[in-house]
Length: 93
Image (cartoon, rainbow, N blue to C red; front, side, top):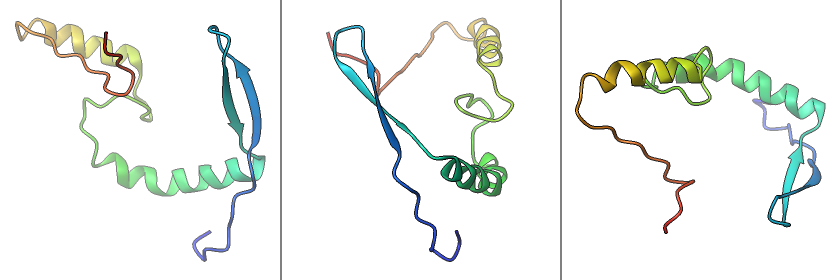
């Protein structure tokens, strides 16, 4: 991979029906591509983890939603306000 000779094969596209009648395309990678992704993940994860904030819980190893909720419960008693954001998923009324 480090030589630049690895090129991932095309993913298999599967259309998933949505509740509103539309479809959502889903790409399924090959086994060899999943192995390549895991190799890269194992190599860079330790280095990248050092740069994340300790209170960042999304898609992190050994971090779980229940831990995030516990942290929220603790902090709710420390401040008289709460800030909640979902920039990508938010919809304007």
